[in-house]
Every structure is written in C-alpha cells, then in structure tokens.
Length: 150
Image 1 (cartoon, rainbow, N blue to C red):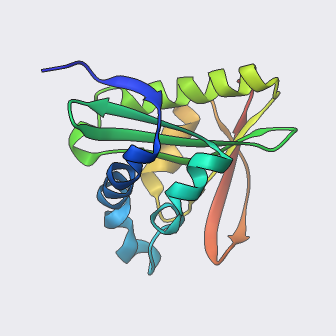
Image 2: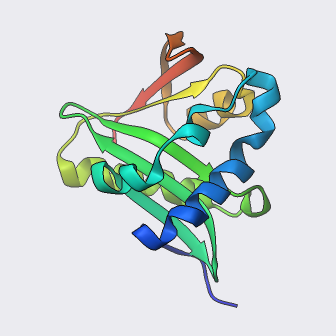
C-alpha cells in the first residue's frame, strides 16, 4: 500500500474533501446543535481563494488543511483528519504545513478558532504550541480562539 502523501488539493479532490469533513465533524453535530462550520464550507470556492492541502493515502483523502492569508496572520480555517486515520501523525503534519504556509507568506502569527463544544481540540491545540486568546460568539457558534508564532 502507498504511503500517505501531503499535497496541494485540486478540483478533483473536492468530493473526497467533503466526505472527509463529514466523517471528521459529524460527531459534533449533536453537541453543537447544528453542523460545525467546516461542514457548511464551499470547498470548490476555497480551492480558489485559499491554500488547500490534503493528505491522501491510496485513493482516500485522510486529512485536509485550509489556510488563508489575512495580511497580518495566517488563518487555519479547517483542519480535519479522518477518524480512521487519527493518531497517525496526520494532524501534526497538517499543522507543520500551516507553519510553512505562514513562513512562506511572511506572516508572523497563525490563528485558528474551534467550537467550545469540541473539547478535544481545547486540549490538542495547546499541546501544539497554540495559546488561547479569547472566547466569544462568532457566526452563531461559541468559539475559542487560539494563536501562535509559526
């Protein structure tokens, strides 16, 4: 079997990205009371407005990262790993790719937000060097904001 490969996403990946996002975020729908924001994103549009990376393993996309240049920081818009591939270092690889995106773009900070109901993320991101910068309601979601230097 082939090794997982991190690469830029293409138009041919949109269906696989959408399947992965549903698999990764579906468990949070009940906790939040509605689909998490990544489940409602337009990945076809994001391919043309953001940097979209995937990890493919064979014919399956097992990870996705969407980053956006906001002139003074890099926003991690989506980070997702397939439930069947979690624990394999894919999340770390995607966050390392985000660090590279920020450095390539000359941006001094990486920011992200997660839903307060995604308690696993509230522990995960600080272990990856992020610090909490605030909490609030944004776009109808209870968010926790994080930042770090690349």
